Length: 177
Image (cartoon, rainbow, N blue to C red; front, top):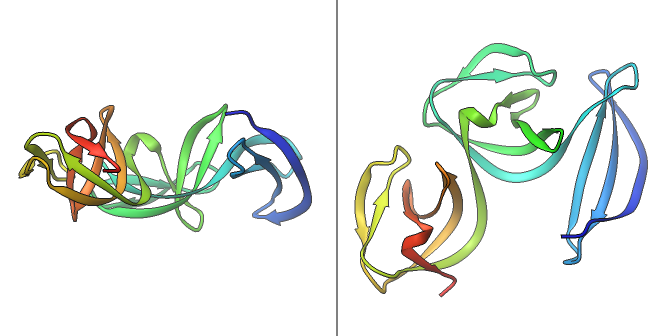
């Protein structure tokens, strides 16, 4: 996907001692991708964040970090779900997901869930249903169509949600049928 810089917004905001500038890019699909570059109080670049629309599920009791990446001493409970609206980037890789104002979690501590809108999936054979812990909790019958609204990756396997805490492997279904 080719990105072309179309706007460099001169809007500068001071927030917790950091300046923020915004660059807006357009893709061949006319999507807008917003990248916000972070500078410390001395004007040194220290990474960027992207505005995202997703959810994270904790992989255990996990630490919460502040905007500077320092542990706050607070934790999130195992298996809990949190809306993530920002992804802090460093060297092109996600470093933290924002789950609240000045509260971030590490990608290694959570599973990112991407909302995909209403999409149909149809089992190609009887397909196992899994809960968020990976336990088999049921079966989707072959040929029956279900609505999915979320996609996540678990141990390299793409999964689609077909019910509250019931997920099916992408390899077991036809998508968009």
